Image (tube, rainbow, N blue to C red; front, side, top):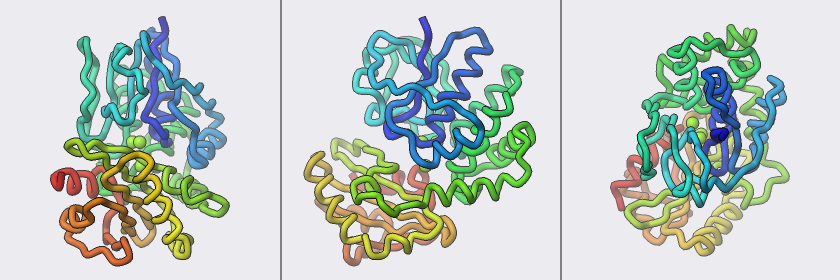
Length: 305
Ligand code: MG
Ligand code: MG
Ligand code: MG
């Protein structure tokens, strides 16, 4: 029986590439694995797959009775609905430990570094498996995406070293220029509805019984959304109503200015104001230096609940 390998719901490049890179490694080690995805791929991920000739993993949202490896998350909130009926053989992740529990012993590779694909890279090294050129290129791009071209506070020396070594395997000289091309693709907002923007990189969190949703748009220049903030906030209020959320946040992260504009709709905005020591104006505030949801947003928000 093949084992499925997949990342979180609303998959980002780390989740898609991680499914591919981890599956290939496991296959080389004699364990039949199939990469899958829980949702549609982003324009950024499509750019990466096209650039290096990668194949889009098949869409699969139900895993009852299956063996699985999960990558880039460990929360039920980001897992398939029937994950409790699957056997989790392993977790590869770089987020806070989530609430998933397993019924059997598992393989666990969890480290506080910039990207799940950096961990997969280390796994290739420790099992002495050669990384094919195309997979190396995709892994490199996933790391450059997750670390925002090394600017994110989540980025470590392990990540920068992995990118350099993967770039050499992939035959890419100017990986920073290629990463900028990728972020230009990622920054496109024209023609996207408010809902599409508010859910592009959306993650639901359970904070002590309260549902909190945090979306992040990483852009080269967030001023492209200056005249759409009211529309975004209006749609966030609808999302809050529809999903019974306590708080909905959209982070407009400007990767050049290195900070994030926070858009907030909440039952209790003081929780957000206290978490970041800010005063919201028109449901907004600028957080200087904030690039990482996992390291600079969630750890401050969670204790408020
Ligand atoms: Mg991710
Ligand atoms: Mg990741
Ligand atoms: Mg991200």
